Length: 161
Image 1 (cartoon, rainbow, N blue to C red):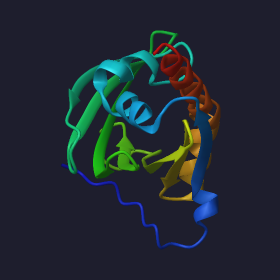
Image 2: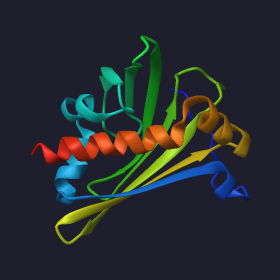
Image 3: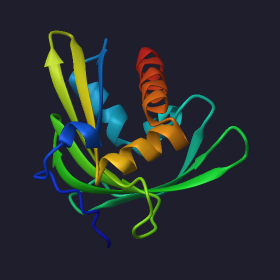
Image 4: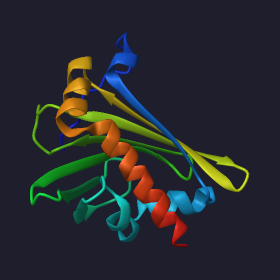
């Protein structure tokens, strides 16, 4: 299994990251469950107009989640996530790629789930190897807009409970 090398100790982390924040009107345990179970992920993961097919999913440190993200234009995007840290229901750390070694746009994501009364606040930090790679995925794939659309879809799915 390949590891994505994202060095957290390199200067200029701000230039290499995308941070999304969102609050959900749902308890933290439910948000955690919807974020970590494939039967829920298929309902909300991905930007507007996308859907996914889960090929493999093993939620454990070192476990792999492979899926294909199907775009609205008929283009398929292979994805691979390797779980690095799982602290239920507080934090998930995982490395994301297309499964190809050394392809552009690989990053590490840290998601924190904070209980705030009856709601849950999440912070999603995506850290890239370089500012150039971060800028590549923002420009090429619309990563910030796509991330926000994905969180919109998560909110809609949570509202169905």
